[in-house]
Image 1 (cartoon, rainbow, N blue to C red):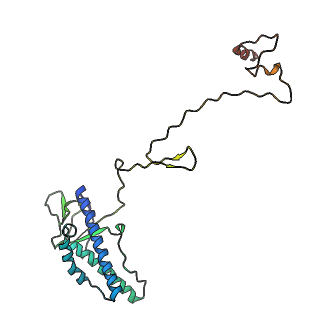
Image 2: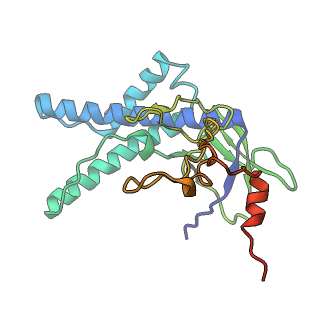
Image 3: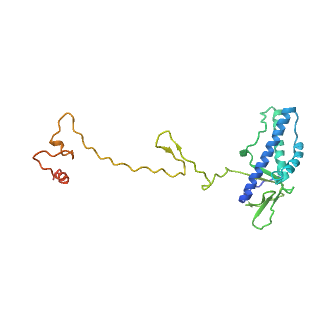
Length: 252
């Protein structure tokens, strides 16, 4: 009876960067193996098998020990075997008359898991014995802390590290500030999020011009009380403004 347990890893910053690098290297290895199969079949109609590509893996690791030689041999072989299983499914669907679905190249967003056999030395469960803390050892990455919330029963044969969820965005202090784009209207812009608001000029006070006289009748003494610039009528003393306002109030 096969069982699978899923636990959350608690890697450090350095271990997290090493896991991302291991994902990227295995993805490039998968794409290179796929390109070799496609070009070989296109040029001479020859089929490349899993064993022929597995034999080349030793030479690749010896030529570039700083990139491919730092990881476990079994996790890189698992990437090539994953491609071989994809081709087996392709030929099976072609034979059954279904939609073939030829294997595709994997982008960075489509390669999120690495697999290690637990018996080959590339990975080891509970690598550092501790009564309360569980760690898993992955070659080239180190001893990663595991949030183990239940007991594992049976013998562990395979360990798979999978990246789930969306990658976190840049931190506020690392975010790059870009200038606001100018709008087609003059004097207006489209500020971006996080940019300081543009100060507005203080409003200008405009005096009220007052009521305008009607053009159909001549100006007379009745318009002088509404026009402060007009002169008082001859023979009449002009009172202060406050007295005129009080005088307009009628008692009950």
